[in-house]
Amino acid sequence: MGQEEYSLRMRPMALHERGLVKPTVSLRALLEGVSQLPALRSEFGLADYFAAITASGFPAVQQTVPRLQRAQLDSYLERIIDHDLPNEGFVVRRPETLRRWMSAYATASSTTTSYSRLLDATTAGDGSQPAKTTTRNYIDHLERLWILDPVPGWIPSNNPIRRLQQAPKRQLADPALAARLLGLNASSLAGPSGAHMAGPLFESLVTLGVRVAAQAAEARVYHLRTNEGRHEIDLIVEGEDGRVLAIEVKLSGAVHDQDVRHLLWLREQIPDRVVDLLVVNTGPATYRRSDGVGVVPLALLGA
Image (cartoon, rainbow, N blue to C red; front, side, top):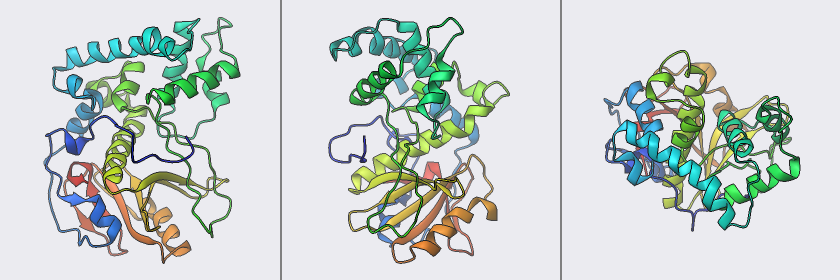
């Protein structure tokens, strides 16, 4: 999809909608430039975020115990391959190859990994790598079913920023689907076997929350990356009036100067459009840095 849809898409429940947290920072207010970002605290810890990633935002799934959550998500993934795609007119000739491709896509969560690299990661060494035309069909049908939910690259109107990349960031509709495709649970995300995916899947959870909140504010969500990769910003929320809220995501409670350098660069490029800069993290408290960048734990961010 070339544009972020805000009128029709029904996404899984974001963290702030699940009844687990009490969000006190409004994304809409930040985008409108009226939030003073009061000092607030959250008791939500890293283990809670990992549990939220794997619990899913599908209501029927997240209200059960972890063992049943995993079984329901596995069943849902099988239904996509065995039932939903054929109902869309797409015949899955090699279900295991499709599942491997979806697992490769899950591994690429929160990155702009190219489709050629996804293909390379799909093969099992048995010559069963799908053709590019086949994977293009995978993408088209899985996006239509809202299983894949990539974040488009941001190209602002009257663009003063040159050499912006349009490649989308890979995201599944729910980070729990990515976790199941990769065989990860909350414990493994906290340990050595899943540590490499902890940051990307936390960004997926943040992205889901920001998209749901932005939809309520009639705003669109993008990411920013220059062609040479010199500047990258995880999420760009653009309101109807063109005002911009730029967001970096950090799986950490601490925010350092190097974490905000791309945000400050963007404000220098388009000072009249950037209404606020934000780091969404796993820390215990909201605060405003001396450079004006706000820091907000995901558990406190709502619509």
